[in-house]
Amino acid sequence: MSKQLVLMDHDGGVDDFLAIMLLLTMDHIELLGVVVTPADCYPQPALSATRKILDLMASCHISVAESTVRGINPFPYLYRRDSFVIDHLPILNQSETINTPLVAQTGQDFMVRVLREALQPVTLMVTGPLTTVAAALEKAPDISAKIQRIVWMGGALNVPGNVEKNWEPGQDGSAEWNAYWDAVSAARVWETPIEIIMCPLDLTNNVPVTSELVQKMGRQRHYPISDLAGQCYALVIPQDYYFWDVLATAYLGHPEFYQLREWETEIITTGISQGRTKIVPGGRKIYAMDRVDKEAFYAYILQQWAR
Image 1 (spheres, helix red, strand yellow):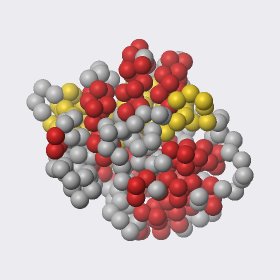
Image 2: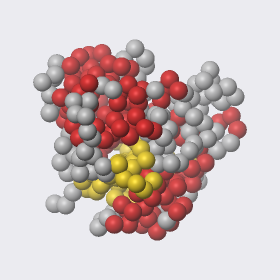
Image 3: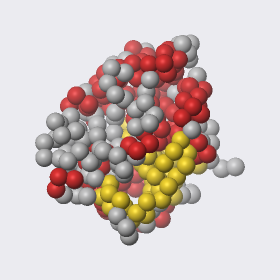
């Protein structure tokens, strides 16, 4: 059976790096490349950490590209500085050289090239804003036919967003950050016929990162990948942290853990609700991850990182 082709587009948050690590453990997946969108990160440490993770997981044949897109509403610097911390973890700095290549093309041009060269339709695994995808589609509309689906961690449908009013005055609290960073580009992707499967806050709010789970990762210290995952989550355990990107990515490994629900939606691009993923009759049809077998998910990531 041929492998499922996947191109990953992440934005350098703690859980983005962990999503890459999970994706690389899936034997049925062929990862065609990784694009780093400069949203929830500073780009240089995020690129460096991404390449070091690929090295650590013996996947240095996979190329990494830097997207040059820019958003409308920057992530808070307190979020973005995590990319520096991850890049400096000792486990990622056991060698003075990085073998995973950084391509000269921009991330959006790399996305176009990879999709055009793919011999079968590709799943875009997007754990950050949709801006790079929108830029690639604008540059080369023909690639739409090569995209099997977009699996996206983003949006909030029937729950409040996570763009807090004290961070962003003038907002009503309905937007999720990956949509809010560049709602205009998200809306452009919504205009395409490409199948979209969302992992919204409605689901991720029910799947927290717990101290118990982080400690279980720590007890797998003889497995470097589990040790790295535990170290990363330990950095964020003092705050309310959820399995955002990892939960979305795990769908590619075990879709049977999830229940999907169809919604008609639109992306609000202006005003106090900018970035809201709104349910509207007659709107763009998408699928949202509605339920997940949480215990099966927790067991799965522990098993996959035990290496």
